[in-house]
Length: 319
Image 1 (tube, rainbow, N blue to C red):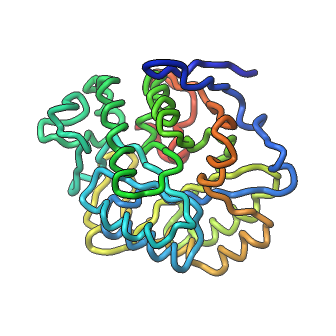
Image 2 (cartoon, rainbow, N blue to C red):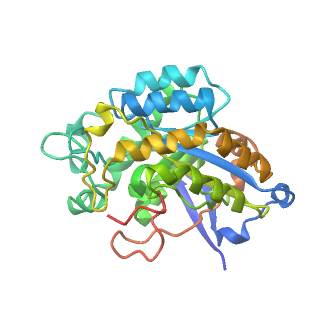
């Protein structure tokens, strides 16, 4: 079953979004071999995340990097990515700051988006607290547009957007905001190209992530487009000091993120990708094949009433 929605910008029609079961979105070029996007999230949020991304880009495997642009570590991320034009770059649209010891706020002056921030001008830590403060859709759109513009102004070759903690896609109105912005800037939207989410290693024990990652790669056999989402990091004092304020946040987060970094850099993991015949692809290539190939993979429902799986990442509990 499919549905069609109009995505409208001020001044005219931006696009028509078809909504379908992702399993029915196979494309002709996907018929011969499985394809895989390896997307690293949260790059730019701190030094340890940036250095983990640098290591993966030099030693490991990834095809797309989603950058948080609202933190003081953005410029370091930009410099790292400038040396790696082969990787697709996305804006990790951010409306939350989930770490107790390290909180960030919007790109815009917080006086311009007061419904999105606490009394200190910082983003709320969870989706629940974000929506409890009744964010104004027009302020969300204003801030997310500023985030994309900042990424472009910094020289990042942005080809797609996605959504930190799923917040920017948590209601019908916010989903339409993201779609409008993607149309405005001619960007892809992660999960709008018919991607199938591969199982995640997010909650696997740090010492088990490599084994689990290899098992996942070996299981991606069907001729589909798969998305494997990873959160890189290093087990340094900086990252180890951070506490996730979300319910169900991982303890010893730094060790978990170090484990995911090590997995991507493991020759055994890379061999498993090759053995499975997976063709690596990034969002830059998907965007360049035509944005008209995108379709809305789910219809957002009001936050707190959804029956859909949380879109990002799929293994995190709903907050």
